[in-house]
Length: 349
Ligand code: BGC
Image 1 (tube, rainbow, N blue to C red):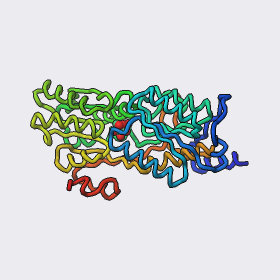
Image 2: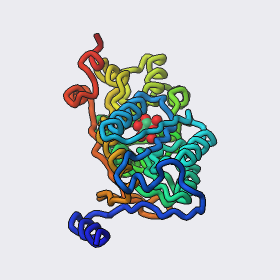
Image 3: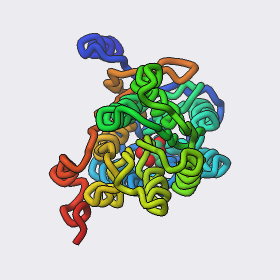
Image 4: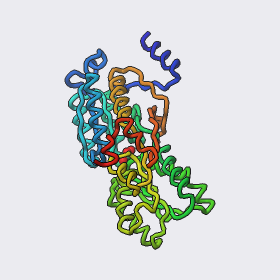
């Protein structure tokens, strides 16, 4: 009867219902275990993070912690600092400790498939957080509309600088987001390239999303073109910062359009100052809240309402994809109204 109701609920919501995996291993579940989750006790959530390097990930951590506390879940957070072996080991430890559901922000979206396999052998569901886990049976993906972010960045650039030399700076190639962003950017830029309006004079990915890599790519592009760059489509604020350092050294900061993503504090200040042109604001609270709420439901074997989907190479992963917002000098205040930043954060003291 409960199963029937669940199916009915899915049909009514027109949503794909995500069901937790069945345990396939013979190993015993440790302390508390799935039964506690099923019976409605506190759920043990493991949150495996790649990094806290960018300001946004510190927010993700705090907000997941806060929401888990508010709803009475037990949270176990581990940060791998960009090391795949460490992230895999940390996830294994979470499973050994009896975490009943994993939320994983993978460093490497391909390697993290092994975390999904290990979790599923114990009947533990896995949510890919912000970054997709590829070629795996991952249960749910919660993120923003990443391809759309790439489109917003390129649309903004093309609208304001419709002609000239463009530099594309992608993120880490091991992060599927970097590839989705580039896809979105190219969706928009291709016709302008075909018309000969813009010329892509550099098209690279910054390893580990490093600002130093973006700086190097920009310096190289400036040298090769004799400083003739019209726009830099940087995939996030960290790489935008690196590109802007190179522009500053060449006396070109503020004269070349630079995109970004994350609406992090230093980028907001650069936008006000005029050295960065735009960023993409991705509210983190709904991401964190949705992840914790969905984790609890999956652990309790309850359906999750996920209306989007994205293919990860193995399947269409049920997804919850939130809306990004383009921000430039004209609307920096949206981040203040939202409570994401204070007025002093954006405008300086
Ligand atoms: C996230 C960005 C972040 C980048 C570097 C991406 O996967 O979506 O918000 O800036 O990783 O950490």
